[in-house]
Amino acid sequence: MKTDELITLLGADNDTARAESTRMRMRGLLLVIGVVVTVAVTFVGYYGVRLDAESPGIFAAILRKEVITLAAAIAGLAMAVALSRPLANHARWWMVPLLLLAGLVIWEIAASGVAGWQARLMGRNALACVSFIPLISVLPLAAILFALRNRAPAAPARAGAAAGLAAAGIGATIYAVHCTDDSMFFVAVWYSVASVVLMSAGALAGQRLLRW
Amino acid sequence: MRAALAGNDAAYRKVLGELAIAFRKDVAARLARNGSGNADSEDIVQDALLAVHLKRETWDTSRPLAPWAYAVLGHKFVDRMRHSGRRRHEVLDEALEVAAVPASDSAGMDTDRLMQALGPPQRKIVTSISIEGRSAAEVARDIGSTEGAVRVALHRALKRLATLYREVQE
Image 1 (cartoon, rainbow over the protein chains, first blue to last red):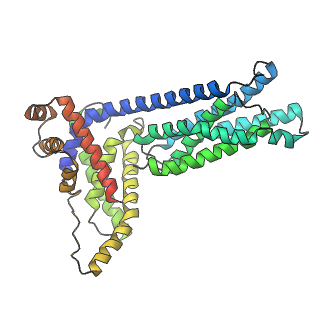
Image 2 (tube, each protein chain N blue to C red):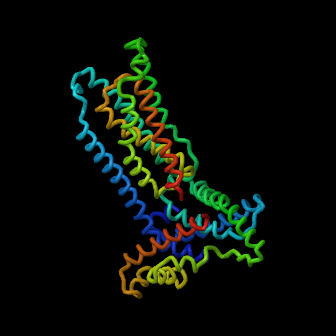
Image 3 (cartoon, one colour):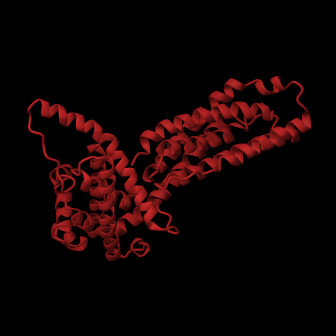
């Protein structure tokens, strides 16, 4: 095919391409929201919120965890979108959840000292945490990657990793209402481990799926 | 380009034409630097134009067009170069077997390959629009379909073309 012929075709496709862009963006957004809500409802429906959630001390502890996990989810999503463009860019949103986490760890040391830090770090349910969060996050990760398929990342693996961070944040946000380990030391270690697992999976998947 | 994206088809074709020229120069320069042949250069230009078209929503319209467009071209070029090494080996092996080495189609993607991948109605639509210069409405009347259906078929054909370019590299 001659290039001029191709250009004629592309010109004829101008309107359709424009409509498609909008439609795909909407579809992607709805898919992600739908999957996240479904997964959240399923998990909380099956495993329930922790029984002591209403006591004020525990409620505050859950809130602290949720602030970080939500920050991670939003940072991940913002980065995934920013990184899915051809122009190489260095999205730095990940600093927000990291700084929040560091801040809250410092706060906990200030409030409760460091006595018994090993116990607080190990917690009682490290294995459940590290297993559950990736499990909960798998479908959201798939949905996010699927929604990004129409984009054009300069570095597909990096965009995939950002999607992994977003999925980890989402999964951790859902899990945190059930998780009974409240120490920020625990969160700093085990939620991060789960995030790294998801970011690696996201990078590997992104490398393959987000090619253009 | 912003006018083009807002719906001005003529402006769009003009921008694409200018991009084609710029891309061709850029590819030639890159190939010269790499010391490779020119056989695939029009392929890369077409691949990049197609990507500009299909991935247009990744362009931030508040920023200049050129850096984004060249980034698209660069990405396609690197992709192509990464895989052409493999193809060169295959070509060498064939030559050693005293088989005729097929000349690359320097006019871009082999039209036959594309047409084979499309069904007959899509083929007619693509040919009518690109070569005969008919509009989507006219083609719709010709084949007894609606303009909307023709536009959808065209868009699918273009996405298929993009996939074919990717397959060439594998």
